[in-house]
Length: 382
Image (cartoon, rainbow, N blue to C red; front, side, top):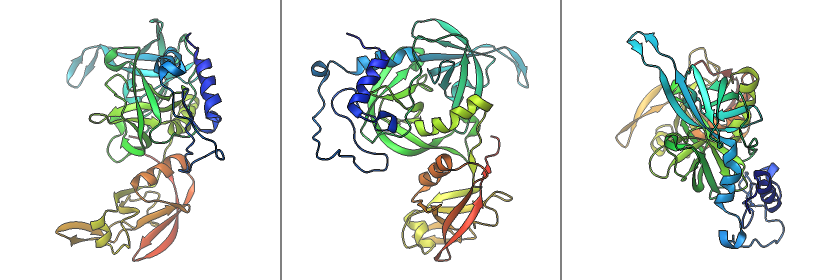
């Protein structure tokens, strides 16, 4: 018997016990009890049985795919021929990727999938094509939303409020290389990664809080959902960098950005206005830091939010034959939240703050900790 998506989600909720709270369990075997804070919810002394294989449990990847696939679509963009500074350009198909239903009217995909099209169409699991209209784009998170002129055969997919532990099994559903109706399987192999923003925003900024997976991602998977085995979206597939190394925009960032894209068409990201470096052993030694920990301020943007509050590098020294900057602040906490590395700084700004917020910044300056305040701005246009 093939279950509907709602039935599969029901099984997952029963086993996980708290799917809506972020305890994203499997639809087969045991629930994953690890919390996002890094602890373990043991549920008293409850024993968790090992997972059953597909034959014993009667559920598996095929049922997860059957439940999710009707809510996933192939996204195709088109441009018209036009005159450019280089001469006339050809029109026609411009790019393609994947997307999934966020609500009854809207499909989430990647900003780099959408680009700057004249026309967008999506093809559902029933092979029917629908026209779509771009309602919002955000190159800094590589997310975009289109509104559908019609209905896909599936229901909107639930988006997680928290992220599962490393090792959690996932499926990626989409249209790699234009082959709609495809799925790849793997695990969450990393969290809190930073990856490049879409092509129009690359350079100084990156995407925070990204999920890493070993599930195969190929051109065309971009914009498709990365789901746990209860059908919950934990990331939007966005990039691949080498064998068994793929990345997705986290569900937590989706929850921040997508509602604003639907409501206003854009999203403002918090902006501190500094260029930073990781605190590695040589940099720590050159700046007399007790440990290689924190985020080093290499430069403060003139007139930016941190101008006058934080201090960038003022000199240079040589450590073990390497030149390292000196004199800059080392950020070790924001609003009393420890900042151990660059990814922590990006994650805090992306998920915990909004432009206009005033944050307390704890820095190591001239060998001592100091506390300063910075009113955050909004990132400039790409």
